[in-house]
Image (cartoon, rainbow, N blue to C red; front, side, top):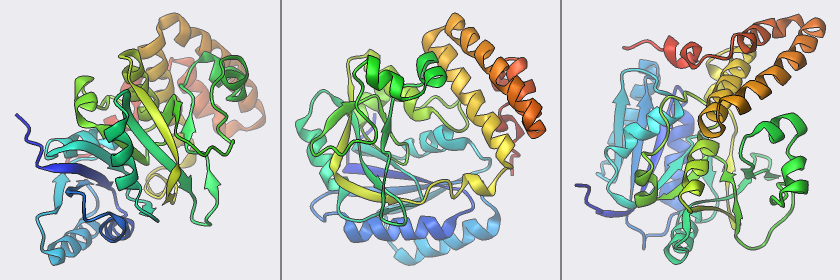
Length: 310
């Protein structure tokens, strides 16, 4: 039985980006209210030894039980890495925070205070700024046939979804918030089994928020608080762009088939066969992606299957 010794467990994944992980930890320690009892759990997702040792040295110098480091022997991806961290979490709330983020006010306390008073909320996420101090899109609509074929403006126009580019001043219910800062009520997160670890990268946010929505639990966007996100730091170091595009589409089709059914999945696949068949004629480098769509984007060919155990 888990004991709630802390208010918040902050869970961070490191993958060959210890310099960003260290900056992220420093920003948490600097900008988080001392009135909160929180712990920081770092999961190293089988980084190169030099990177891991750099992170380990920094954490050892902190000399505090408040910050933990746990290493996985293989790269389990976003969902798997976070679920690894959950095993050590001892709090009422879980914050899954990307290592390429910096806190610029006190979003953890803001999120905590909001969740304490909003019983219908399973999770929330703040406004994102990029490294140039520019606002960026912080929430999105569930992935679906309509969104992928007609674009994101379609659900906004026909299903009264919030406008992703509008400036809001008060918390609003959205489909899902960006995965770089997801602040969950632990009981809600656990009630649906957490992240789907079948997914290696991408669409984990859409999937988990969709499952919570089916249980009557809402996701909120908090425009009044914010953080900085250097997007794609770890991903850009791993694979070529076409492999990342294939992984993105693989995860998307898996989530659509899982949450909407076989017919929904097949209709979208036929559209994408036509779309990327034409694209391949102009840009031959897309043939690899086109072929993967043609055979159904099997989850068994995900990058997850190519990870090595160290």
